[in-house]
Length: 207
Ligand code: SLL
Image (cartoon, rainbow, N blue to C red; front, top):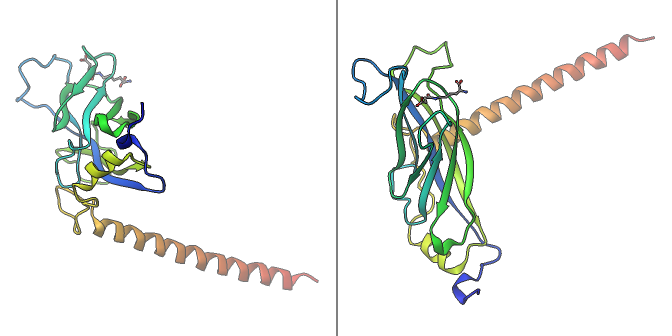
């Protein structure tokens, strides 16, 4: 039965930034002793806060569902760091399920991350470590009162102001992207004007 604390607060939505993805590297001489011979790479999939801050105050459990070629392919992580390191030979989609703390009364959030083992940008010098990492925001619409209070115990937007090698996701990166978008818009506007001019010329040529 719905108690007072499970009442949802209309008109409010609270968001929390999150970073997820994988790193990978080729295994050289230093292989984990139990790695099967056909495994070529060691990789880690993870979910974390942008500055590695604790996210367990609202996330209870993260489940990674691996390809069926893996023994016990459902891997449950019950405490931070919410990450999993494995070895393997192939790329596949990992299903990530985020379970929020009980009081949140939120549905499990399910999404896919494509495990990357190989560099795809051949114009870049081949890196030692492969990274496929994304920034996203978890949005809680109309959280219940108790969960809202819990969320409010920690600062909300923890995006750092500047890029670092460890974490490119930052206000700086957002500003750079906005600048690129604005440059793109300007370029498109310019091309539209040029085309308009050409069309006008053609129309004038006609008898
Ligand atoms: C592929 N569709 O063919 C993909 C499947 C499966 C990856 C990739 C090792 C599992 C294990 C592993 O890397 N599986 O034998 O433990 O590329």
